[in-house]
Length: 71
Image (tube, rainbow, N blue to C red):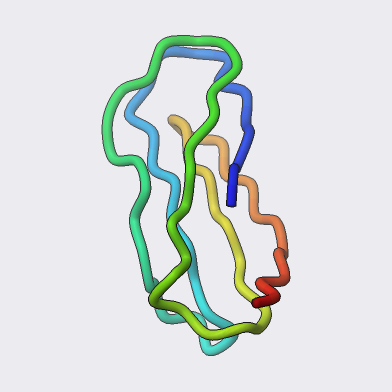
């Protein structure tokens, strides 16, 4: 699964995957990223089908999006 996102300022960034119970199941990014468009591939082979949430934090900004994993 490819996750595309945009970073507007150079701050510490985190991109995390959570399950429906709110438990973090994967951390894809935990570093400073350069401003601009980014793509991260989430290898979801070890995860079951269902609803997950992707949370991007960059500085004081936070954005969460629901995704559905279907196998």
